[in-house]
Image (cartoon, rainbow, N blue to C red):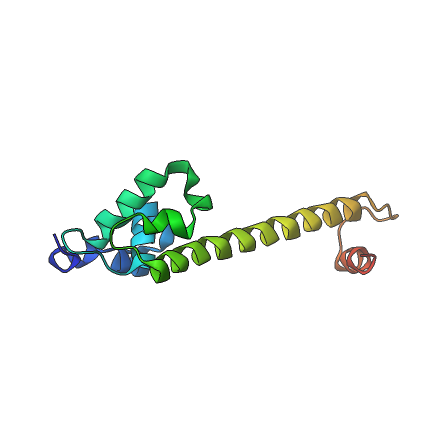
Length: 130
């Protein structure tokens, strides 16, 4: 069945726009990245097949792994792997920033002053120290 034959509220792109990414499954999100299916298999079916076969290893999937799927050429495989790498590098950076923020916050709150309440002045002093 082609996606065009589905009701609009069942299509991944439209659901993403209406409800946000958290309303979609992994395979639906991948279907958006893929963009189109192949003859005899719509994009959602293709995405579901990729997710099921790669399982928990999807985040370490390679271009060569993806090219084993019918209809996935080098360009599409590279697009998927680059998307995963982008998310992983962004996530890694966000985790590092969160860790550094938590360390600074802990040091700031352990910084003793006569007034133990947190004021904007205390925050400025704490952030100036780092």
